[in-house]
Image (cartoon, rainbow, N blue to C red):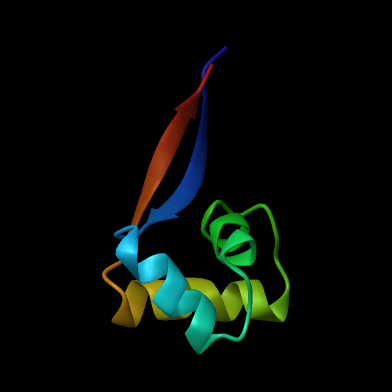
Length: 63
């Protein structure tokens, strides 16, 4: 069974800048972009990633 999971991709160099801008860790940024967390901070990270850090919303195929 093939499933698709929504993710947001940003350039690797922007992860540290996004973490600093949201006062969170890089791990928190990775978890937010992979939709593993859904806190207010995670939602803010996703909004900023899409609007200011070159983020692209896409899907990942999981087998």
